[in-house]
Image (tube, rainbow, N blue to C red; front, top):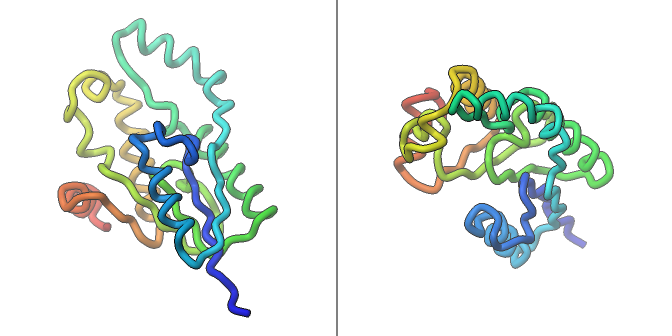
Length: 174
């Protein structure tokens, strides 16, 4: 009997919810389920750190600024810890992550592939609103996190040439 490739499918939000990230995790997971692979769904990931970071968010809002929780090291460590526990219970051959945050600080020997539609560097000021109101610390953390994730992964898959070129130009490796 042939052993199937064991894929650890990672999404911060619930991958079984079609409303999550415009249905991207849901549709990728649905497509994977039609393949001859074994899928371990590591989703959703807990975000207990939100309570610890809430005062920072409140202060930023009072200053008419924004922060992104998923770029803080406390969040990245939490995601890495959760994935490590899930992988211990359900070993996998490769990780496929929707987004770059979940695996940024994950220490493991298996390949990591991630999919995203944009990179942090290019989103700054792109939409206005939230992205143009980030604190300087939020910008630093976001750039650091994205660069660390790209260095950490085996393959970064982007939904468009625009995003892939942005990653090559801004980060230097994609």
